[in-house]
Amino acid sequence: MHSHQNESLSIAGRNLFDDEASSSNDTRTKPPTPPKTLHEHSCPNSSESKNEDPLCHIKHYLSIVDNIRADGATKDTSRLRFFHFSLTGKKAEWLDRIPPTQITMWDKLVSRFLDHFFLVGRTSTLRDLILRFKQGDDEPIKSAWIHFQDLIKQVPHHGIQKWLLVQIFHDNISQTDRRKLNQFTQFRFSSLTKEEGWNRIKEYIQYQDDLWDEPSPSMNISSISEAMHPTLKGHLKRACKKICWIPY
Image (cartoon, rainbow, N blue to C red; front, side, top):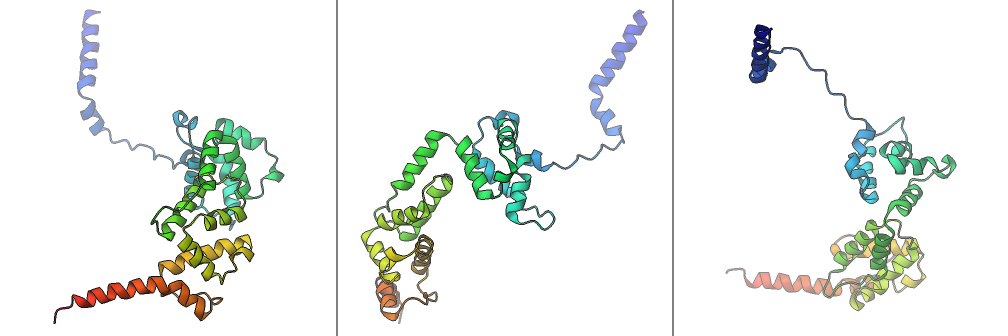
């Protein structure tokens, strides 16, 4: 009995200190790790899922699913088809309760998802920032436009109609930029539709960013001259300064 215990201790001691050697001599191949499923990629760890930002969930999900093309399906179809696999717990239960006939457009599904899981207080705060947008002193018009778009992206379910978004931006940029924007649209900004107004703002921002791009066909020579004059004058001043420094 005593000799048997000594033998057991000897074996245990050898196993304890010789693990590395024994593992190096083990020639058995380990089974390959199966690739992660879409569900495993999209879902956070269980410890994180309770406090997960629903907007971050959407962004992470899109970064994966937009690289998938199943049976020639459109991007929106793929997003709708696989969204359920990215959800767990209460989020999955919430989606199961929605009749399939009501899940036909990705943007509307995202809006409902964020409405339900986005914190009400945070939604209200971010929505208020959009409504109170104002171009900063000496802030370039392009920076103001990027800032305005970033505010909108932070709360896609803001519920603010597009015509009002256009009006908010137009009315809260500097007087100088507002005058130039109106000149760019031949003083017809208030008569544009919401889509036309939004697109004309983007065109104006691009135009200011690169004056030497081909101007919009709808602009006449007079409005082009008025819109580009201040910036062109600045270009000429800088060119003259450079010329003054050229050694003879």
